[in-house]
Image 1 (cartoon, rainbow, N blue to C red):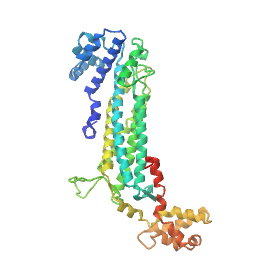
Image 2: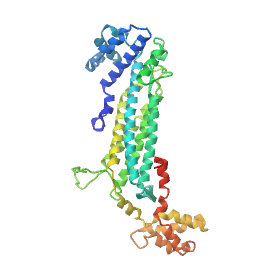
Image 3: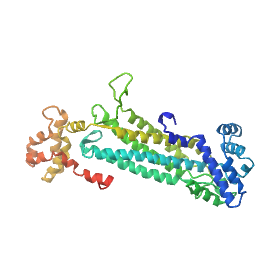
Image 4: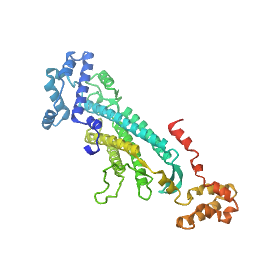
Length: 436
């Protein structure tokens, strides 16, 4: 996680200060629960609340000697609290603190990520409605297919991101568990009621069976949800990159005054933001395999997952947060060129109507195979060179006696109406955004 691709609210979740603050809150809440249940003196939680603290540098110093971060932390806290600190961590194990803390951090990160998705959804909806009926050519395999609208493209992205929002909420719910169950998770030295009380106060649920660690299938599902969201970001970014190509130029990233596209070529306007998003998506997805491999720990626990999560937790959430907000900005400021869309749509002399002509010939009695051949032989003339005399598909069809034997010129002309392809746009928009 580097500052270039980080936003302050997300990075704050992963600082040592935040981590130790959560650890201290977990220990304090556990002490308060124990005091309420009469297990420790009632003045202990008050002392921890009043004098509880830690020093990051001191923790690092202690850890260099003891080689254990939770012990180092507890030693530092004890130096602040005094004698009452001996009642902290009673019956608990390090994973109770570490795993519960990670749950809190991932829940907080989820809230920020969902807010980022909401910003992106708002931008996509606004631009989709703006370009609801802006015609453009749809492409399959990168080749002209049939007309659509730019708004329909954006509506599709909106629907996909709405699904990602739902996935993130499910992932947040699944990761929001608390483990205060002691060594191997049997509650041998700590009352299960402590876990219930701490979980409630942290806004978490007790982990049903923690085996000392929270099962890592939860974390794998969480990072998988992040990865799917990142892949959707890449899909939108890739579309914009294609549309910005010089030969297409139907949409373009905003190019600000004073911005420079190339150190060598002053004319360049490069899709650097969406290219960057493609790279960030790769980084987020890279967390998935390690997260899946963390699921299979030895027996009740080992710490092979620990080093992985110290990396992928901050990195994946921070990169996705940055990517969501960068993409939202790209969509908000996206330059759209309807005239270029129209010119590209007309570039192949009406070939995008080929399926309609095919179906009409079939309806008139031709076999599908014969109809396909009749349409294709007239279409291929256009493909040779649309700029030459044979570059008009309708004219070619009108000059083909076998075609006009089945379809009149008037009927053929009607089949080249753009509105035919866009007649269900309202239906699509209602499915995505509801009734206007």
